[in-house]
Length: 109
Image (tube, rainbow, N blue to C red; front, side, top):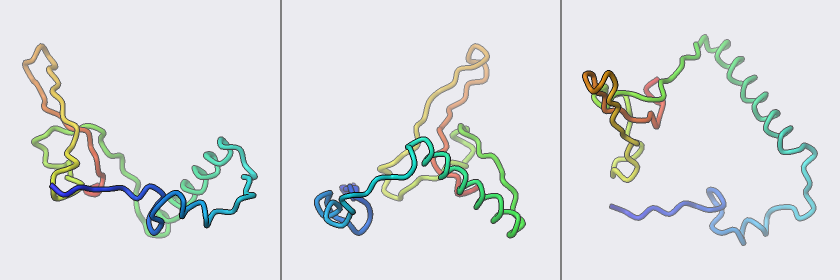
């Protein structure tokens, strides 16, 4: 298995020291953290709604948990380093047990 190392400061920037060199030193946000979160949500919602309308798309809900045998859950990488979280559900006093996985990518939806 290959060793993966995340870029800590984002793509194209190798270290936090390099990041500090390009960021403005006197920057102060005009919005509070909550206002920023609400603004990001509003922009995201606006884009989703209008893009869907223009492209005649329909929003669908993705399940959070699927049966292992469903084949719905995608593996995020080919080397198997990020496998789905899997657990057993023994419902109905274990008469109808389910081996389930958390959905990790909604690309099939």
